[in-house]
Amino acid sequence: MSAKHSGNTPAERPGSSYGEPAAQGYVNPYESAPRRRGRAGRIIAALLIALVLAGAGAGAYFFFNPPWYKVTVNGELVTVKRNATIGDVIADGHASPNPGNLLAIDGNVAIPGGGNAFVATVNGTETTDPSTTLSKDDQVQINDGTDATETFTTTEEVIPHGTIEADTSSEAYWGGSLHVYEKGEDGLQTTKTGDVSGVVLTEVTKAPVDSGYHIYTANTNGEKKIALTFDDGPWPGTTDQILDILQANGARATFFTIGEQVAEYPEAIQREAAVGCQVCTHTWDHASGSGQGVNLTYMTADEQINEVQQGFEALRQALGTEPQRVMRAPGGNYYGDIISTLEPYVDAEIGWDVDTMDWSRPGAEAIYQAIMTVQPGQVVLMHDGGGDRSQTVEAISRAIPELIAQGYELVTVNDLLAYGHNTSVASDVQVIN
Image (cartoon, rainbow, N blue to C red; front, side, top):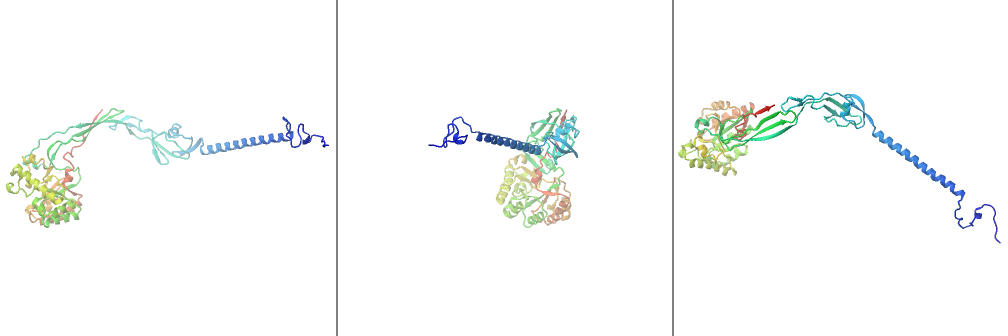
């Protein structure tokens, strides 16, 4: 007989016995209430944590990104909104700079106050941009604006070169030391038109060079450059002595060589080139034969061409390179038909501005005095060959250091040729309002 239980013990729950599930729909009052209270507490705790974190995040954001902060403007501490610009600071009255003017391209005022509104420095960096943003604790200095030049439109126009009819007389030869065959080169004219003022500026930015045969002395524009030249070498002993003096003084010169001498003393020619001097031809044999040893114009056209071409060939053989097409005619006899005859073979013929007459051996003092009359851009004639040139050596050993002490630079003929024959022509600027 099984035992019976009385009361509401778990064993007596309706529809239940020990080890059996409770009847469907039955709720145990002893278990459900504590569960509901625990779940709600956790939700509330989570919400409180979220609110605390959100508050902390917002606080951190506003700490690092305050909506207002202070900057120093022209020595005064002021409060500005976050990401304020220089333009904002000026608009708020923290600075009152006066603007510069807008200038036309000719320098006149086109719009008063139309230039830079201000010039500011932010932490030492200069700016004229009003949209420059300011950060916390920036040091800002805002000064008056500066003048600005209007924008402009540029056009270019070619200036065609012309052709000159050269004076080929013997008298014209002495009009300058440089006698140059120019192929001609167009010039260039630039026109600028102001976008605001409408002012037009026209300027010759490159002067045209007329084709033809030009006779001139180099205009070095005040630069104290001169060219010492030596003829009739190379010569045993003398040429090396002259090169020693040039090297000792950091000077250069130009040697006009005789082809026959070049063939006999190629080492001297090679040294001339190695120390930076210019090596040119003075013909093959100084116009011997029909030229009577001094005048190419006495020769036929074929003889003239051959005399010069042989001189170039001697240099080519000695130096192993193509020689420069620069020459000096014996005696300065370069006039008449020879000018057109040699045009295909010669780029320039070089005369002189100062003749030391050293060939006549007038004494070292006389040669020295002649050298010291030289002016910027001029060419001095001397000789390293053709006889005893000890007076020349003595004169230049004194003259060269003195010229350098006076500020002269002793250069090559090519250096003077580089100035061109139009260097004295100033750019022509025309203003049209």
